[in-house]
Length: 377
Image 1 (cartoon, rainbow, N blue to C red):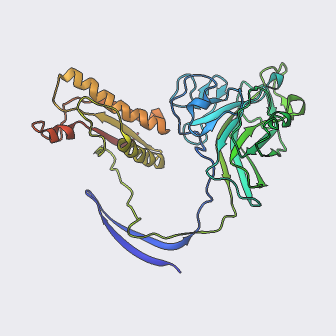
Image 2 (cartoon, rainbow, N blue to C red; image 1 turned 120 degrees about the horizontal axis):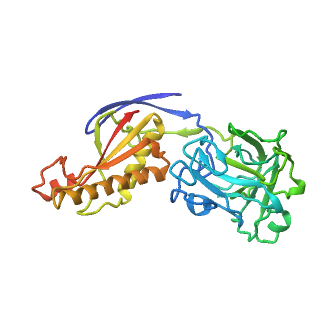
């Protein structure tokens, strides 16, 4: 049965008429991987082997130096970087790791799942890979290792049975991902996909090549091969495709109208009214910036221009610098969330464009703001 209801929501600027359904809704299966496309990061990458510190929700289980690439970076950027050239499959970032190298050297990715897997249920694992141009080998040897505790081994070699079973308190579920062809495409992304039955202890997932060099299925791409096989990796997905339909009840208390931003018009962040001489973002400000980022992510053809403002207290030259810092704080937060720096510009306007009287403290606080304009380039 489908029930139809209409709710009229009043907004400050707009009136929305929302027609919604109370229905058994067929949903996409939930991806159990946190930060699956490597878009959330602590800091823009500036050096090799720093994925463990740079990326949110991902780590390295060994001493292998897995890399992180993002378009915000000069030294570890996309599409061009030290090992080749590849644009991200999703968003603006991806990981890079050696799956085959001299002396059994290996690099891995480790992440905690949103929830442990359920024993006896079947899951589907997939991710996208692209071979880096400087690689002189290609392999078809991928594996996934699940554990109920995070791994931290003091080795740069492959995580063999001997290595992982030194830790007697951990439980494991390991299998090789069957591939019939060598994955040697350096131009496009190739999806790797497999299904498996869970044992019920899988809380952490580790991706990589767990075999040594002698057991790795590989092929040479160059006559003199010394470099190894380095792959870019993006968008990891782990889902249970057989989950039953989810009943979602929508009520007047839970329905919210999505903010609509008119192109070419100036919009003001409501929670970015700074204290005197301040430019840092608090939690409420970051939450609002996150909502604008989500809107930009849904509209990949939109670009944002950010303007910082001040009140009239102090010298204009200083206020110009302060307003620049305020706009830059918002821009950095958007970039940290994953917005490509090519889609954002920012500047400080100083005290030149007040929206309230500077004769009162309330008016001056309204002028200590950040605004933005969305456009199609």
